[in-house]
Image (tube, rainbow, N blue to C red; front, side, top):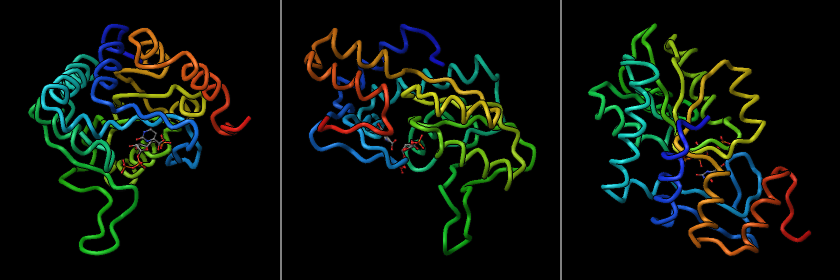
Length: 216
Ligand SMILES: O=P(O)(O)OC[C@H]1O[C@H](OP(=O)(O)OP(=O)(O)O)[C@H](O)[C@@H]1O
Ligand SMILES: O=C(O)c1cc(=O)[nH]c(=O)[nH]1
């Protein structure tokens, strides 16, 4: 669920301005889920733009405060949300931990890096939700390993797929995002970041992304 239309449009416009939105319909991207996609939203680029990363961190931090008050700890999903999650925690003056996809194979063999005590209230920050698998894997680690009390999750962007909605509902995790796919592609077309032909490809792909084939 997005917070509000204005923030969603503003966030999408900023992502478009910094070229975080990549289109390659002829040579699709492979996503973490294995899906092939004509679009890739690279939120990591936000970190290279000080004013924009401040805006994104501030929006996320303000929403954390508004919805959850002050949790004990902010957790970022590695690696995409380590940078932005740290900035959110900094903005709120809170401790930060990050969660690896799996335990490290050497050293202390941690999956959760940083200091987290049992039963602490945690808000999770993620950069992007496609299927939700990576984010919910981090939530599982926080619960199983640290007995964390997960208040909810905030992300910069979501594609809004039903599979993600179902996964979050099943795991009883509340999710809010700054922007979403519908706002992004409409904003991109209205502000001439997209040709009509590209908009049609993106709308067609969105109907059935798991089975999309660029050559049909
Ligand atoms: O909702 P999902 O289907 O799980 O996909 C979204 C995940 O994919 C990306 O991470 P990626 O695995 O590419 O790793 P990175 O964050 O280390 O770049 C992104 O940062 C999300 O964590
Ligand atoms: O699902 C993914 O792997 C994914 C999609 C996307 O648009 N951006 C990203 O960083 N990851």
